[in-house]
Image (cartoon, rainbow over all chains, first blue to last red; front, side, top):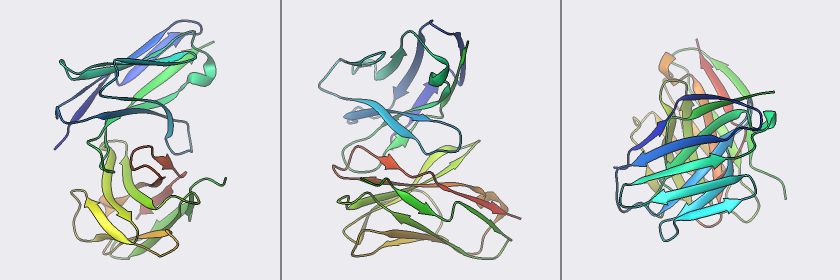
Length: 111
Length: 111
């Protein structure tokens, strides 16, 4: 089955800097790659997603890139703010609701 | 629109007991998935239901079971609880089989 690896496990940046989180997946049939943000005491919340027929997608300060050949995708957060501090999860799926998640990255943005 | 609602929010049980968790999906969502979240294993897929039928199942023992009702509400049951079952159990509903909307979870502690 699908295996998703996520790096780094923790990331600390200064407010205003950029943050990058990287994931790799094993199954070349995976075609949907979402990113989730989980704040303390809450469930994960979808922040951006990308499909396998697209190489890059942006939404304000957040962007995701996908390299199908290398089977990796990345989350880029620019101009980070303290409220971006959370745990971020990447995921990959092959259609149906059988999402496989990375282990998570704890992002800390220092004011 | 109301989000995904999970009850109860916290639960304390002892080994050998059984527990039932409840999930009410977003109105109009017919797919409900369940995940187990632990610090060591991350987010692990339990099972997914669509129109009262289990469509996918993760790699968990038969002690973990679920069902879905005609109004799309779902329950999951864990029998003969073990210490290792202590975790945050997350329910997610979906309209398009891809974008998952998570509830805040039920924190289960097994003593």
